[in-house]
Image (cartoon, rainbow, N blue to C red; front, side, top):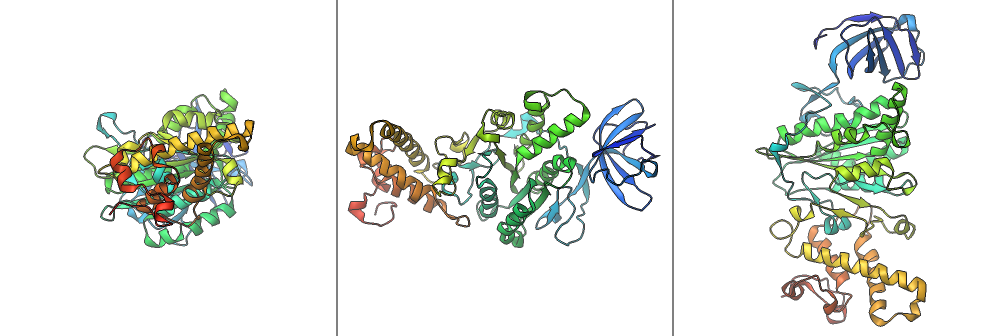
Length: 472
């Protein structure tokens, strides 16, 4: 059946949960969108999950509760789910299907695009470059987010990953003369969390450079699968057609994958690892690989997905496969969270593999990469000393080991920790880094060049509490 041709079928043979089986169909394909009309005038929506001979299995967005099989009339669109694209999405709050929740009018556009997207031709991909500054010291200073990158947040249930993701979405920025936008896809969250996210993003929404998609735990599974794709379709238009630098936040991907697993089970597919379908890797890649830059086009699409690890298991299929596809990870620590540190950023477990493409001379600041490398080295040494102290006792440590323990405390308190609505400029972030590193004697900062030390190193006993900065 060609796109635009609508044939209406009457009656259904069975309904179970969200699944509706229609017999006697012709020319219907997978992922095709259908409308279910009831005698009461109600209209429900669905997507074809499976087709065999003359019957089709349709997953109904609104579920099949209250349906009488003999009153069902369904028409298929002849194509997959499409949405209008345009800048009219900006400043709007919508549900997971793109329908307004903010009381505004429906969203229209001159063009409708398939939400499955089109893969970027590798020959036309450009290397990610330049930074998106988030206002979060731990990210900007140690694991810089680069335009065109996909950098996930790995977390555990109970940690403030949603607050951090919303804070990044609210605070992120590029240069003032460059167009920027944020697309936030909340996937499978509670109503309370949805309200909190809207509160955090409220100020940015008034500026009109963000669109928020909200899919709650009570919404249908098939909507949960569609939400990230709808968000990415809007983001692709803003990035590659309108030349904006777009940050897409998906929170969280684990909820999406659980929906994929349940739909696969409903289809009767043979499960793979922990019940997930064998194609989960390619399914996740179809989302993550929509990030990037395209040669000859000024915009970029950057992804910051949140991945919650069940029971903290990083070998779980979702974080495991995500790690293969993405370019680093930001790991949140339960131990730091218990100490009241926000964000509870695990420095040694985190990495931005593309940081050198977005930070350093000519991009952020000349000393950025050096002080970041030095902090990583000092944190690693401090962790070794802390492990040693657990064995032999702190009294058995020497003066240099005690200085490292004091540095670790200062690093947590004076560099990592910041308020949930507190945004730091890059200069402030690097000043905080130097202030913490200057707790130690100059000779122990072996990762920094002499010229950089001359410019930025300040000992507290020399300069009191004055903030570190360029000499002179």
